[in-house]
Length: 75
Image (cartoon, rainbow, N blue to C red; front, side):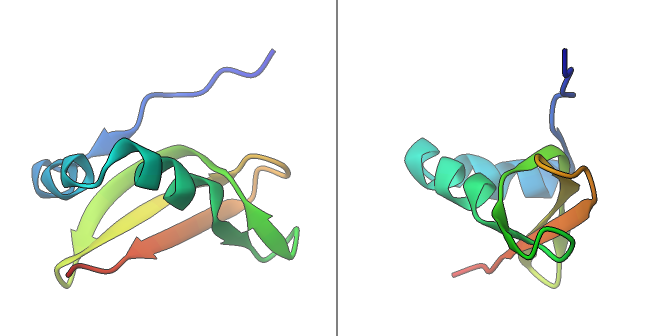
């Protein structure tokens, strides 16, 4: 059985994430590049922070467990 942790976000990152509609959040989470799998995968056990005004999600690949990241550029 796999146990996933709840996402951890900074206050600023949580604000940005909440402004994104739920259906787009799912698309973002399902489209993260894993260099180990060499494919687009789902990010799990992720956290969010803001870097240069953009939302940065860091977590693990749902398939192999390697570290992955996804940058969501601000508007």
